Image (cartoon, rainbow, N blue to C red):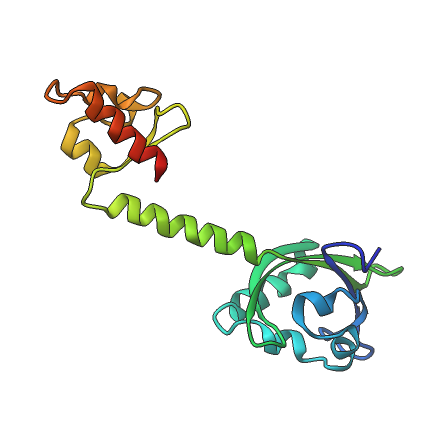
Amino acid sequence: VLNVSPAVIYALNRRTGTLRAWEIDLVGDNILGVTGYSAEAWRSDAGLWLRSIHPDDRPRVLEAQAMVEQIGTVQHEYRFLCADQTYRWINDKLVFLKGEGGDPDRLIGAWLDVTDRRLSEERSRLISGVFDASQEGIFIPDGDAKFLSVNETFTRITGYTLQDVVGRTPALLKSGRQDRRFYAALWAQVLAE
């Protein structure tokens, strides 16, 4: 199960004689594919995880990790520096387990590489920013050439708000100055691009 899951499953035990130190008890071999470090490297290097968290994320991550004993579970995302010196976004979920006497003694967790999702979200934010900031009137049609969205410049130029146009076709913009061939050529170009 550890090595066929897309998530990296791990377990940490409290280090004997310490209050807050944890050591890796179990980690799936699939950690190699996510981080570039073998399971053995993880077990033998106690500082690997902390050292590899992006410096901008480290304070927030440590604060969340400190809360796990109080609230029982933590889920957060942060950047991790892999062996190839690239950062991957990790979704890390921890569950705190208590031993027989109710003493905290084990953390069970799962890492999921969410880099592709994070990059896609960032790309969407950038595209949205360009759409919103453009000085050109822009509209986005669906497959039936009906308005899905318009930017503020479109509204300023045409006077039509998103609520006015959504679900309608751009035929509402006809000025009466152009013939049918003009609009057919325009739509052929829009749909081709």
